[in-house]
Length: 290
Image 1 (spheres, rainbow, N blue to C red):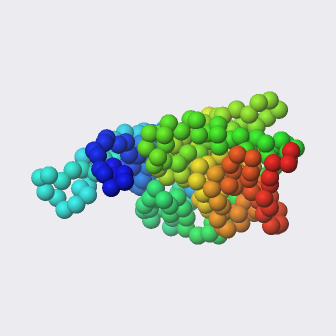
Image 2: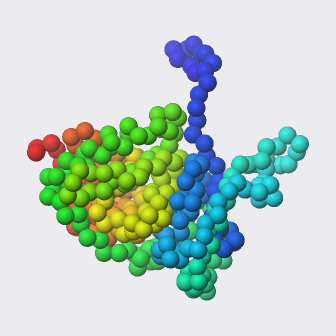
Image 3: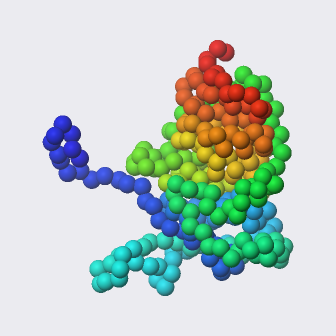
């Protein structure tokens, strides 16, 4: 650490980034860079968002564990001192109906490709944007008065931040939190932290699949950082009607949100937020005028 020209030695905690290989029936499909933890949820959420599975009925079993030595590769040319790259493997075993769905995708040529997803890119692997458009469901908006929805959204970043322990320790991870919005108090269902924001969302979607909660049509998804294409795509496939982001949205994220009927709140902080309604109108700044 260097401060005012003077240095001192301190121990620091850094966010762990490791590869996770997702397999389907023993065949490698994708390698994603992620923070360790909730590997099964991540794999299921990824496969659901990408259309490889359409529900828990497509899955017979899930096996997760460390990568075998034969699966690992050195990060630099091999020598006696070369450390092995750490990693883990999740193998999703499909049911009969899941195998039939996978077979149809393989016939279309999609299974021929192997993908690498970095911690910064969550959309590698889509064959085409056209494939995304046809999978967007029509999402019903939350049955909330606009004023109440706005007040709820503004409370979510603080509710999420106090539970971001890994971010507090390292400052190097994102978070995604899913809140149930019903007649009663807002309930935090699940929160995941990950070095890749899209991974955190995949973990939520996978957890919802495990719990039989899909579609998530009575929830709000809150995310730290910006709101990109991949986050909105995953939320749309999961049926989430409202998104709240601490950072800015991208143009394509808003395009998809509009197509799916998702309301987007961005720059959510304190008593301010930008509302991008699920309608073809310009965004406007919403201030605290309640």
